[in-house]
Length: 370
Ligand code: AMP
Ligand code: MN
Ligand code: MN
Image 1 (cartoon, rainbow, N blue to C red):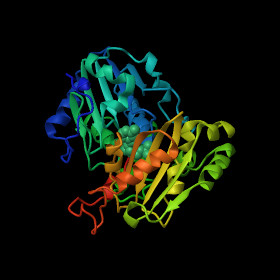
Image 2: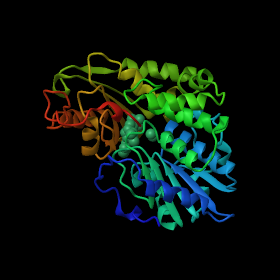
Image 3: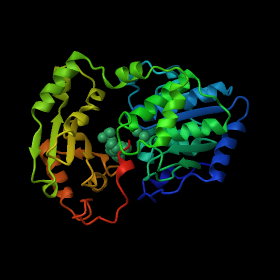
């Protein structure tokens, strides 16, 4: 049974363990014991990224191959798939949250660390016959019935592939493309530290189906409307470098307003890759992008190169994430939000390097995931 949705997002019992054999068996059984006309609802996190969508759609295609007919995939909020993902296999299974089955037999969540990331769809956890949570956030709050949470997995799609193997579902090109998008997204195109031999072995299995990595990467990472290129020019042009902040490790930041988006006729998701252009700044460990969502409200993305734990900053300001990649919703003017970040960066335990207070923390490598 599901339960837990009403417990809110209590402080997370950090997951360090792999899923147990009993958990894998329970997950397999929840799927194989579905009645013939069983209804399955798949949900990924709000503002879905490549891992959220790719893991969900890849698994949905796997369920379809198993003969599950009554399948819906969805995510909370505005039912808008970012342009780079609009050619992904399995999108025909996607429905707006408003059309999602109110009481499915089984609900499966993908890349969702906490109930808050399910928005209005959180009630499905209590209404469904059973719930299954597939994730890789160490901070996962274990809000479902059955959990497959692997904090060592580079992406949720790593967990998805393992479950598909246990279900006896072979990879086909559609499934492989979805899982590849997810894996490439969360490893920063196989650049981050959690790009292990196992990650490359999984990529090899996916590529062996015949999918085209160049074409997929171009679509997902390297294609942007001209208006977005100009928008990036405006926003990057106002980037500020503060070398003395973050205990002298440096802070670099910028912001994008709704007016910027309107002037260049761009949608909010266009701004998601912007942090990657800001975080390359050599003179700063911490980078930050404020994306206006309403008057006095900002979606904040933060990254660290390893010297600072930005998840502490995010958690202190009401959000979450990983040590090297985190975010929160900021309120007030852009300078006010930045001032709050500066203050949190100065607190004990935020510095991760040897001179800092948190030298005992485990190596930060794999935390740079989404
Ligand atoms: P982003 O900067 O949006 O790519 O997010 C980086 C990481 O921070 C991801 O692991 C997200 O799950 C997490 N994150 C971003 N925004 C929030 C938020 N408002 N609340 C909780 N976690 C967040
Ligand atoms: Mn992820
Ligand atoms: Mn994600």
